[in-house]
Length: 402
Ligand code: FEO
Image 1 (cartoon, rainbow, N blue to C red):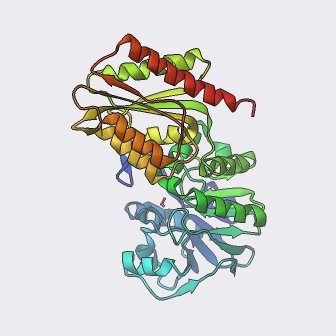
Image 2 (image 1 turned 60 degrees about the vertical axis):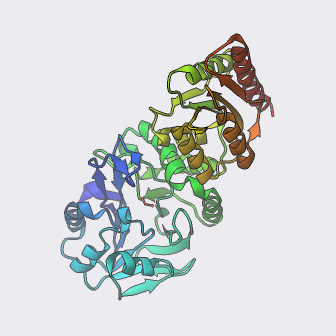
């Protein structure tokens, strides 16, 4: 038995850290790395909850054996099938050939499809129980958080929720994995970036899952598949972060995201930002989309209520990075933002037209008329940009009292 791996009582952390990958899902930068968390319940019979990325199998197996030695594992519970968690299923099955895999109707086809593994399965439905001896587990189906087979496992004995990706965040767990043993400051921003980029499209299923959990469970420990194990006051804090983000609720503030080839469109962004500041808006985040990675922009858009987008006309279309951002916003079905926009052109002014189409489709509340600039800044364009900034500030301030 390894005392350093204890989460609570007989529950152990056997996850691993990935500090090698630059991009999670080959898309999202992970400057703090990422952990793939798996948990082992060392009861009368042993249960393993989720696995890890197969690249880390050797260290994973060593961690498992440091807890249970040569004892067999009776159950492998699969809450989520994305390969960062399911990747070691085939090798676990090779090392523990009598293991029973626990999943729901959606799980087993994926196991067969990804890994060619079948046989010894226990199919559960919502609310089913599994008795390990001391620990009594119950399964809750939470489809589309953020895959169709996603479910959660709750240990009613110790109040521990194994939540899959839900309540996860980017960032390895360095030294300790319990929130009480480490400095958790940087995880909160990485939680918003993780949620908004990875789970962000599925606000409605996340809300359904949260309502189900709230009505059924008293959670004392939150064991996600990514990031620290959360305890005490942090349990409520983490759930609140996920609740707000999945309702698209946001703080007062403005994201100004723009493309600019030669700095002219950027000057419009500067004028708008200066006016926002002059009007008392403190949270202003500016993203030059040729430099900021989209994952940070999306994260800030989930964080703040105001969004202003600017684009030069490029080959009669939007600037490519602006087009990419709009596609990501639409893909996440972001709701309830106050929206402003501006564009520029030298000889064929279509950027504002395309942004108008986006504004209509998104159903965002447009705070004022767009600003369209031919070539470079003029006094008239400055004034229009200031008017746009002032209109956004006024709309945000209306909410302060209400
Ligand atoms: Fe961490 Fe959806 O996998």
